[in-house]
Amino acid sequence: MTDGISLHDKFALIDEHWRPKVVARLNGQEVKLVKVKGVFPWHTHNSEDEMFLVWKGRFRVEFRDRIVEMGPGEAIVVPHGIEHRTAADEEAEVLIFEPAEVCNTGDIVDPEFTAPQGVAI
Image 1 (cartoon, rainbow, N blue to C red):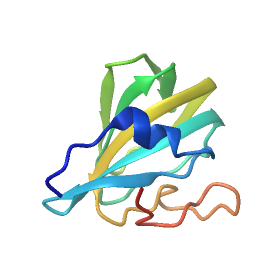
Image 2 (tube, one colour):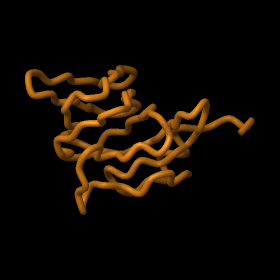
Image 3 (cartoon, rainbow, N blue to C red):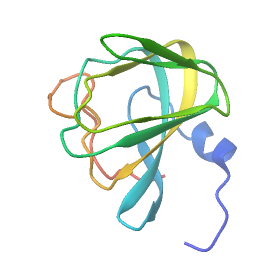
């Protein structure tokens, strides 16, 4: 891909929560956009680290011993093997950076939250 990406335009195409969409692929990694609202299930990624970067709204990553609250322009890397869940009281827009084909629910399968992999916009 050699064209620019308008994150504003790409986020406008998303009309569901907790369903990441791939906007770029590079070096075995995917950059995904997701709209979030509510609370995601507790889970672990056994082999993959993931990075969350808040684009719009307020977003938090909850660990068993602490909560990290973030706003636009703030990011966090969740190391593999660390149990966590994500949440937003109001709708937020978040970029996710992680290896290609990572299941968004990690080590669990949830009929409501497990999203199809590799869906691009």
